[in-house]
Length: 152
Image (tube, rainbow, N blue to C red; front, side, top):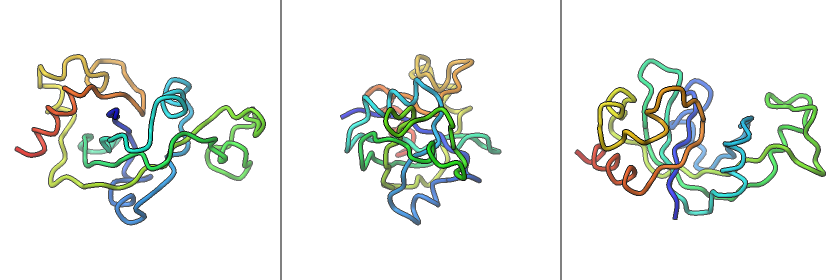
């Protein structure tokens, strides 16, 4: 099993939205590195931190799991869709998505500022300057440490 962190803006799609619908396609990712992770590396059952970004207190807000492995993001093919990409071709898809399943909402947000202050997370891409990826791997050690913050 692998561990991941996936970011979403809570006013677009937040942890409460996922809790309500239970399972949701994680679409609209338009970065090749993040696409490759969804297409090639994410596996059903992988654990994922749900991270709220671009909000008053960005941070980790809950857990989800990968419910369906990477498949073409058909929103790229629909001219009326928010994430339409005229260069994407159904016969040779450019963009992929996974389905995620709600697992748990944390009692508190684990704020980015708190994560940055932890020396145990110094190598985590999330806390490094200039990292703007919306999807990133989390090492087992980082996962365990963050979970200890949740349980504290």
